[in-house]
Length: 412
Image 1 (cartoon, rainbow, N blue to C red):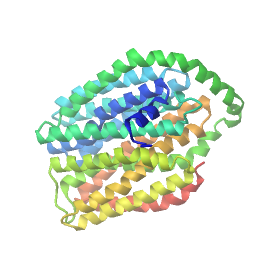
Image 2 (image 1 turned 180 degrees about the horizontal axis):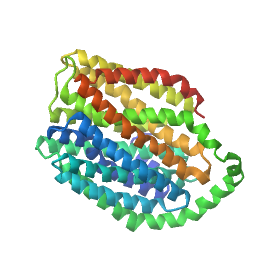
Image 3 (image 1 turned 135 degrees about the vertical axis):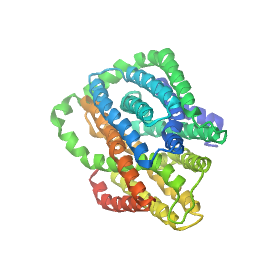
């Protein structure tokens, strides 16, 4: 039987609950809209003459807004506030951000747009992550749901960056903001007209099952679950920092060039980023499927080792005139590491936290993204502006990878 035939793919897709399928569709369209905004915005404002530090400060502003809204979102989700309603609010904030960034020509407007973008992300991610296990059933494990959701994220982001890259060749990279607005409007349509009906059918069953299963455990857990999460949160803080570097600093590094490596045009930078994201879309589901039965320490150890290999290649690329070849090679282990981390971390967080605190646990996990974005781009931008190259940055990150490998064995 051909596992990749149309009928096989359809049967696999239809085994998931209707509500979960709709959420995954929403995540796909979110990725399409957000992909270009997240990955190509640094290129747009770098071409306007913004320094790496200024772009880093913009991302820091977005992170600050995200940290604030994550706290509020986690609290509301713990109080059984609908994750669908919070996603709708996130869509509205994203649309406002897109309008501001589309017309931005100065640093103040850029900061304002980044603030609303960060607020949208802080509301969206805890809600979208918690929606996955809440819409799984006894036949579908949350790990499988997360694997599929992350695949949708990866495919969406890849398509978004690809469309933005095409726009850059027509000297209209800002089309990414118009695309994001259209995607947010489509998601609002999905949530308003379809998802609400299917959610009502299963909400009470999920709640009853969860309460019965964990009622006796919640008293036992208290706040001990936070202590148990510390090794995972530490590694999450680092890997999300790496993701922030790959999203905001790597494009600047490619545009500026290395010690010997030549600088790239905006179009070439966008093309390289598109290739990286295509690899993520290709590898995400197979890697998640292959490692689905492996324990968490093994997954995170493999993730850190893959990151180390990738950053070694990025460092070496500085010393070659045609260093882009090593950059392309580096994309493979870097992509594999993210494919391991993203579904594994979300699933580990959900399994480690009692039902009563799952909203707070997801918000805490999501805060790692915000904290990393709050600090890492700004510090990395300062480092690049000081040394005119990202070599020192990639070497520092490589050392941290080595130091964190022993900690991975403590993840439950």
